[in-house]
Image 1 (cartoon, rainbow, N blue to C red):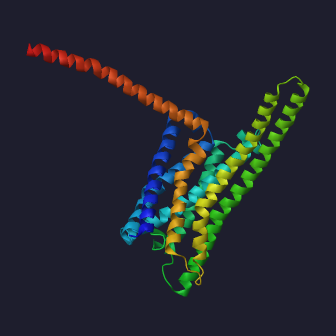
Image 2 (cartoon, helix red, strand yellow):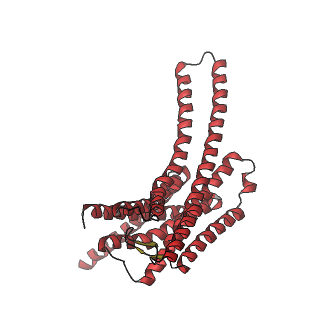
Image 3 (tube, rainbow, N blue to C red):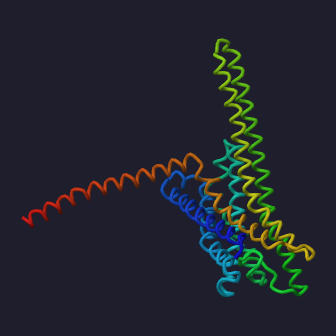
Length: 341
C-alpha cells in the first residue's frame, strides 16, 4: 500500500471508532431518558442512529478490508448482502435527515399546531415510508443484478454487472432514478425546510430586537454597558441560528454530494474517475455516520445533561462498590491475622 492508501485506512479507522462510540452513546441516552423517548423527533433520531450503527458494523469494516487487501472481501453472497445493506442504510439515513428537517419546520413555523400535526403515529407513518422507499430500491437493485464489488470504491455497492448495452442502459437508468429519489429529494427537502426555519427565526429575532430597543429608549438612565450587551446578544442570536442551519445543510452536502456526483459522472464513458478520488468520496459518505450524533443529538442540552447523569450514576456506583469492598477486605485481613496468631 502507498501513503494515500495508508491515510485512507487510518481515516476509515477513525470514522469507525468515532461513529460506533458516538452512536452507541446516543442509543444509551435514548434508552436512559424517558423524555427523549416521549418526543416525536426522538423516533427519527433513533432510526438515523440505528442505520448509522448498522452501516458502521457491517459495511465499513469490509470496505477497510477491501482497501487493505485490494480485492473483494468474502464471497459473492456476502457481497450481495452488503450491497443491499449499503443501498438500504444510506437511503434510510438520508430520508431520516429529511424527516428531521420537516419536523423542525413544523415546530418552528406552526408551533401552536405542531402537536396535532406531528404525533407519534404520524412519525411512524413517515418512518414507514422511509423504510418502504429504501427497501424498494435495494430490492430492485438486487433483483436486477446491479449489486456487486466495485474496485474504485473498494466496497460492495451499485455496479454494472455486465458490459452489454442492455445491462449498461439499465444500470444508468436505475442509478439516475435512485440518486434523484434519494439524495436530490432529501437535499431539496433539507434546503427548503431549513431555509424556512431560518427565515422565521430571523423574523422572531427582529421582533425581539424591536421590543428590546424600544425598552432601551424608554429607559434613558440605563448604563451604556447594558445596551452594548443587548446588542451583542442580538448578534449572537442571529449567528447561532445561521450556524445551526449551515451545519445541518453543510454536513449533508459535504459528505454525500462528492460521492453522488462521482457516481453520476461515472455513467459517462468519456469521464475517467481517479481511483483515489472515488475512495475519498466513499469515505466522506461514511463520515456522515460519525457526524450525525454530534449534529443532531450529543451537542444538544438535553443529551449533554443525560450524559452527565449517566456518568454521575456510574461514578456513584463505583464509589459504593469501593466502599463495600473496603470493609470486606478489612474483615478478611482480620480473619487472616487471627488464624495466624
